Length: 251
Image 1: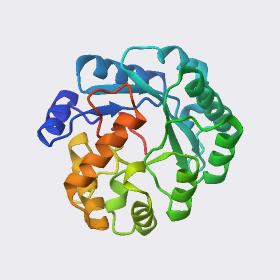
Image 2 (image 1 turned 60 degrees about the vertical axis):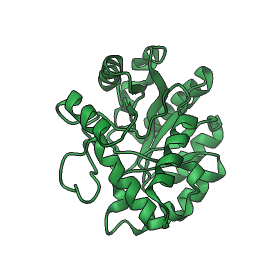
Image 3 (image 1 turned 90 degrees about the horizontal axis):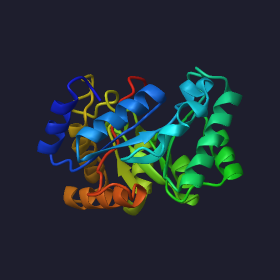
Image 4 (image 1 turned 30 degrees about the vertical axis):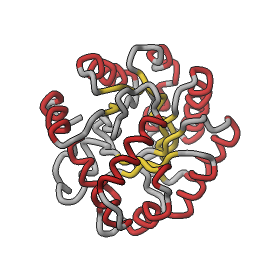
């Protein structure tokens, strides 16, 4: 989360956000997520190894998955845009984290950027976990359809509010309400009208409002659906979480 974690959480609460999941991307950020969750009853943590950090090896984070208030594995996946870790190393780390999600009966949070075919290939080889979330979705209708075909949830960040994000908006029109989530990916990707500012959990309501307007439905319907979906995707959260902010300071 951005600086001033407690203030950001309080701002989110005042903006009617009822729960938050803070996402681990390596050992340090996973430990930070666990610490924040330990201090706030409406915050939960995930433990994962981001594809940027795949070179560190999944063994560096696996022992943290049994910590209290850890609700998912991830974010894990593939990023061929930056390639901070070699592609074969990314695929191995992704496969190992899918295996952990199966072994521990935990949801899986996926990061996929410019790597859709390999992402689906690794999932096919390892088996898609029962509760899988494509985080910060950046594809279009075709990629969204493939996510839905394997039973995954599709999670939209502030990107969907950007004027040029027509492919993502098409996906937001396609995805059924019962398979949709909204998130922040804080501190990046703040939605309009906050674009250019550090993102924070409170701003998730702007993303939800944009999609509701795009689909021509009341914001209350959107809020209810995404809250219910978050509870289904992350059953260890109680009360249900509404968003998935990310403490890692990278896109």
